Image 1 (spheres, one colour):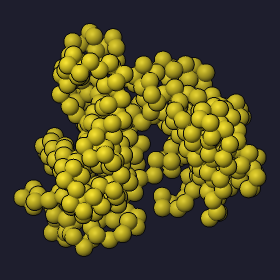
Image 2 (cartoon, rainbow, N blue to C red; image 1 turned 45 degrees about the vertical axis):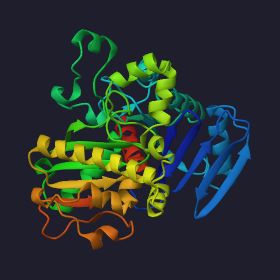
Image 3 (tube, rainbow, N blue to C red; image 1 turned 135 degrees about the vertical axis):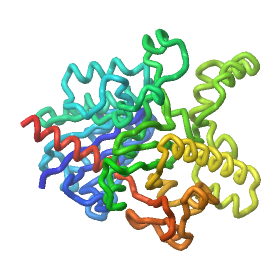
Image 4 (cartoon, rainbow, N blue to C red; image 1 turned 180 degrees about the horizontal axis):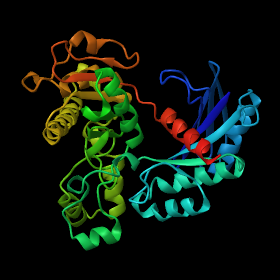
Length: 401
């Protein structure tokens, strides 16, 4: 069996999966795991394989040690890198800037180009690079492929991609809308034409990736024409801990009036805002439980979240002109029944109508939740970014041979 190793390296964690790219999206990966709390006094490695879960607790000083320890744990249980045929390694890279529109075989030159993009994603690309460097050292004879979160949005029209600031300054410093969650939006949207029984080139759709991070995209004929995230993943929808869209003047006001530094404001908007900033928690299960207990802060946070989500859905309906489908995905989108219902409530006049019984069904794969007479079809399609990355990696590796 030929497998792809998929790595998602964060600042203090590494998610990994061994994936059979020929499998169905709903199939479990061959093996999966998480290296977490890298650099802290006590780290943890979790491995899931053949229905069993294995853990290892030990200090993990850096990414190199963490990935090496993960590979050793996999080897102890029969799924190590020497026990299976790994044909390619796929790496999630958050920011590809204007340089990368497609996945790329990683060479020293490509890695240097990704390193040059660090100023655009200082919290993400350095960790992605760490994972790439470590994996290339441990697996030097296997093709490594970078798959960029921004790639799907690379071809957005200038009217959607450009900000109305001084053009020379914007060009000099790479200021434009890049968009993120591209692998998820592309993966999910590619399944919609088949569910509609329409050719892909004829389908206009809105995809809603709603997790702790959240983004929306307007897609015409398989190409993104707009998306909610911007130069960074901070823009757009209200998220778990991120503010989403705010008046940029708030940044100046907080600096001048509250004496907050740039780093203070960065932390506020990225880690202490969103629904967490409004009600103290960012897990929607906790928010729903608090609403059931008549917690007013949770109810307010939920309504702010839904209001912003509906605002983007409405704007994309106008941008597309005609909408054939709206699709929910990711943790909240796939599981939060009320979020889906409230996001599309009272839109029958626009041809959108959810069937409450279909919507209430447990999360069980791709499915339609719209009423039979809804002109715009509404779907829930579980995302599988790891499978998409695995398929990209194997395809490029095969082309290289």
